Length: 157
Image (cartoon, rainbow, N blue to C red; front, side, top):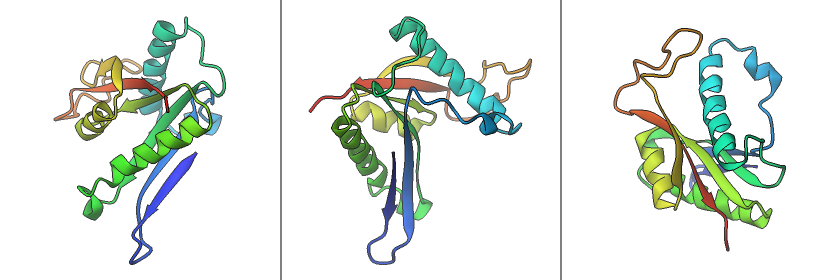
């Protein structure tokens, strides 16, 4: 479930977002990309802790949790609420497909702020500086954002 935002006057791509059913596993090929491994492991850790706290350690069932995976807006279009509109439309799609909960791993201050405004609640937080992957701290140099936060909210009409 994905969205694309275009500038009506130029047709230019200005934003996009990708979403999945949280029951969907990451493609095995993604795990083979060494540069992506620390980030996927961090997301896996958030998801594992969330499942342990809210699903009795089990992965959510298909059709239960709508996972907002990724979203971006071109730099020159930021500040026009395009990201917020895409989140609203994504949540409407999730509700129409009868998902019960929406979840997101908010990795930056702006996304954390947007999702709080949209009614998302913090469930799991991992500080970047203390996260260890294969004996290393791959995100220790992240500045200005203390942590990645998994947030959720119920989907209701």
